[in-house]
Structures are given as structure tokens and as C-alpha cells.
Length: 346
Image 1 (cartoon, rainbow, N blue to C red):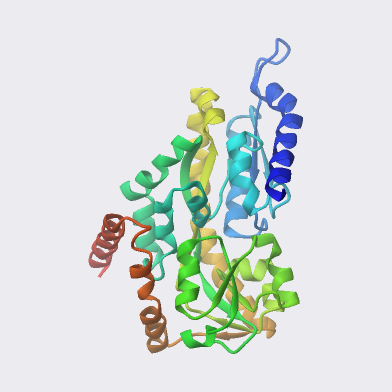
Image 2 (cartoon, helix red, strand yellow):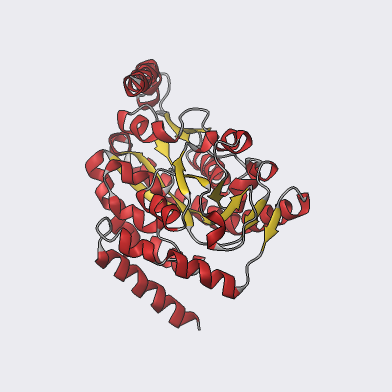
């Protein structure tokens, strides 16, 4: 019944939007410049790496198209929540999203789950070699069969663990109820640590932490701080155990119907917005972690290398447990790319 109601709501939104879309995609004799509207929905605040990049994309597009294209940004789940947004895009009720990579598993594209593997990327340099190269392009390609065009990867940095119980070592999560994104790999990660994984939409996390429905969660510092989770989490361990990234995607039919010159401008704007995202991911996560420390509401534990090694060892079994879900050759190709990058930077 809930699923039926959700689908009805999405279709209602689409039907109400049809006149707007028709006007946006057409031209009239009185207006020689056709106008296009891109609704860009996402689930985080404007002052996060994704939020800032989305606003930068809007600014650049409207400036460079001289008003031919309008980008309407809907942050913080004001238009669609986690569970709704991909279906809304496929239905044409929204044109652009930047969902976390863990979300694509629900479309049956398990290859994206490789980004959820713990400690697969040692640093952002290695990460960007993968996302900006042939591996990244090969991952985006299957989306087209589902009516989606993948345009770019965005970055929100590495995740920390948080809890309302003392937290430093892997065994400290045993028996704890931990909020996760809906990802079988992340679920396996928590189970491997002895925790109880509880999938929840991002917009519901603060209330779940405040009421004790869950004991903790994992997030990059910018998400933790911008959502005030540090007000309802007593401990943070800087594990940097996993990566949180996004794919910028559009409704393929909408994209294919855009004039070629508009698509070129949008692609160039997205490249510049992606560079902005990279800069902000580094800056905002460092600033957010410093702000959490300064607030003194949460005890932040900076792990020693020995402690971080214990987290790596504790999470290594995840790879074996999910090997039936993720192509081994994909994992091997990422590890080769990472090793090559490390060798070149040494």
C-alpha cells in the first residue's frame, strides 16, 4: 500500500508538471530563445560539497546560456527523499539528481557497490583516477538502459563512525544499532563489525539519533555537521573507512531532446562544477571536523595508525562476503589503478 501511494504521488507530481515542461521545452513566435527548465533535486544542505556544486552548476548554466536554461535546485529532500528520487527521475518528474553511489544497487546495477567497499581507496587522488578515467565511464554506461544518463562523479570525502557510546576500536560497535544507506555492502560491513544495520532515509537520521531509534551512523564530517548530528552523537572516530560519492545523472529522454549546443554548454558547466565540488569536499570536511571538535558536544577520536590498522583488518572479511555481488575483475582493476597511482606519487 505504501509503495502504491508513493507511485501515485510521483505520477501526480509528473502530471502537474507537464504544462511547465511543455512550455520549457518549446518555443513561441514571441520568444525566439527556447527556454529549458532543469529541476535538480538532492537530499543534503546547500552548504555541503554537493549542495555548493549544484548551486555552482546553476550559476554557470544560467550565465552561459544567457537565460535559455533555468536550473531549479531543490536541496535537503524538499522535492524528493532518498527512496523516491530515482523513480521520480525515470518517470520524468525531475530532470537531474546527484544520488549517492550506494543508491544504484536498487536499480540492479551492483557494480556501483564497489564504492562501498571499506578502505578500497587510500586517498582522494587514487579515487579520482578511477572516477575520472575509463573505469568511471564504464560504470556510468549501463545506466542508459534504465533511462538515465550518467554525466559525472562528485565527491563528499571519507566517512567517520559516530555513536552515543564510547568509540575507538572496531569492537566498540558490537550490538550497536547503526543507520546505513540501503546498500548490501554497507550492511555486510556493519554485520562484520557486530553492529545491527538499520537502513533509513538521510532526512530521517537526526530524529532517529535523537530518539534513540539508532545508536550511531557513518558520514563524512560535512554531512554530520551540516545536519547537526554532532548535537545527538557523543563520540566520533575518524576512521576514514569508506567513501561517500555521488553520480550526477539526468533523465536520458530529456537530455537527448535538448539541442546539441545546449548539451555542450551543460557538459562544460558540469566539468567546472565538478572541480568546485572537489575543492569544497576537501575544505568543508576539514572545517566541519574542526567545528565538531570546537563545539565540545562530541568527543572526536583521531586514531593512531595502529588503531586504523585494526579497523582495516576487522573489515577485510567484507570483500569475501560480497564477492558474489561485485565482479572480481572490477575490484582488481581498481586496485591496479590505485597501485599505479601510488607508485607514481612516491
